[in-house]
Image 1 (cartoon, rainbow, N blue to C red):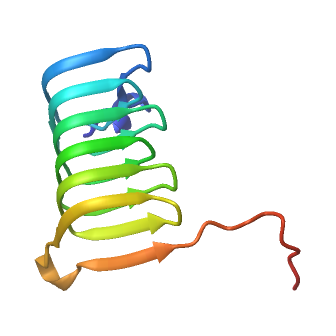
Image 2 (image 1 turned 30 degrees about the horizontal axis):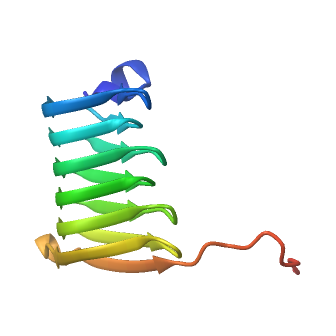
Length: 132
């Protein structure tokens, strides 16, 4: 059972916290502060808008609003929000990118079970009138 399934929360590095070193976890992890080093988890890594990772990330899924500079290994889905900035080497299963995201990376997609996928999502503009 993953950490988030046990207590309903991610393990977390708060926005006022800076960590140097290696993080190993079986559960989901959220970074709103700064990590200089590496994080390895079987769960999901969420990098908040003010979050920053300089180093290596290895996880099953990642949802990024902040910055990652380094190596990123995501076995399933990497979701990049419009405010995200990714620089480095990236290996993923699926990639979802919102309009506005910065992706300056060497990227390879895993072809496990032929499920590699690429999707660009345009951020919706709420100022447009919607019709039926």
